Image 1 (cartoon, one colour):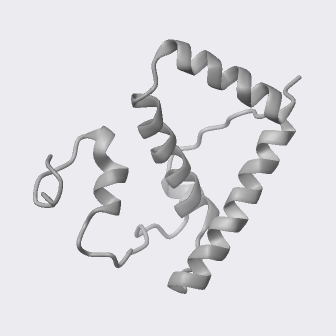
Image 2 (cartoon, rainbow, N blue to C red):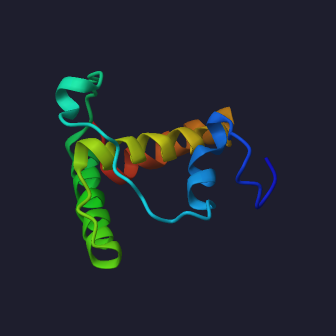
Length: 113
């Protein structure tokens, strides 16, 4: 996919970039009535400090969406998938040594035990 080419189906690694660079900026929420019933469940265990950072990021992102787009960001339907998509895209550009460096940094920042 080249810059400005919005007719081509993006690869998995290009989804977030594709979404940001589309000409149609109007977001339509995923057509899901009840995320807990319609989507698959994934349980993850996180240190409290990292969990708190995710909660703060959600609140900030939710506020920004409401302020600029008048959109009520939903944690399960919108934010968690966004967090995963952006994280997966970031992982594709990181190599082994960078991964361990980031893990060390995040452990220090969040004071993992």
